[in-house]
Image (cartoon, rainbow, N blue to C red; front, top):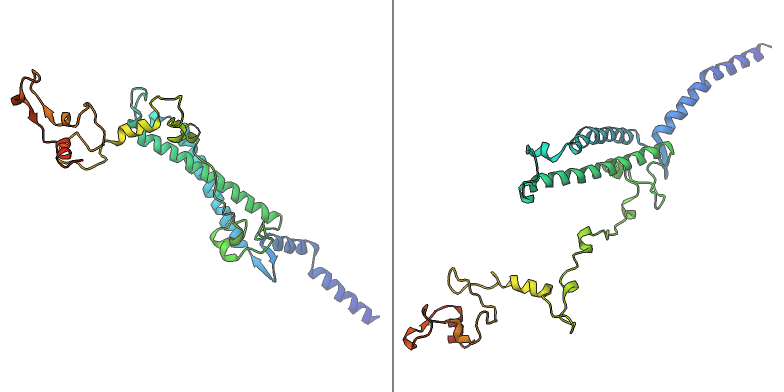
Length: 256
């Protein structure tokens, strides 16, 4: 009888030592911070704290800075009463800063989505597991990038094919080049380029010269007309003809 009482007391002590509430809390604590990956158990408490801290910082930047800036007009930033009388180049810097704010806001919103996704994986007990290979993500990688979804070798390295929207209407010279079409003789893109490419393309023979070596006879037919000139009354005799020592004169002497 005495032995039976001793056994009952021992069983009672065991039951009181491990209560259902404490056991549930220990399990919950284990579920929140520890996940088994491979042959070892990783502690992601610091990683989770870093994610929560970064999430708070990102939300503050989005709500307090970028939202306030976007709700303000451009006149508020420049101090101008109206932008209608300003040339676009006059507000180029302010426009650039506004476009940069939009780009930074989009980047922060994307980062916020990645942080939310990482925190959801804590609830699903899948944090630290590569979404592509199913392998454990190295702890060092998670320290550097807590929101990492995959291991380094599984990162998508595909180069994006997104192109600027203006390229849908700007197709280059070939799109507007009609040299191969016998029915088209208009001034095309190639002609437009050639008309401006002749400026500052070749070195000058002498300073402040507006004539360059283009290979075309512009404004005259014969080569000698490029460096012969007369007075205001025109040709009145051989003694009125003057040689202009310019680019065309040098080319004529050199036999080009």
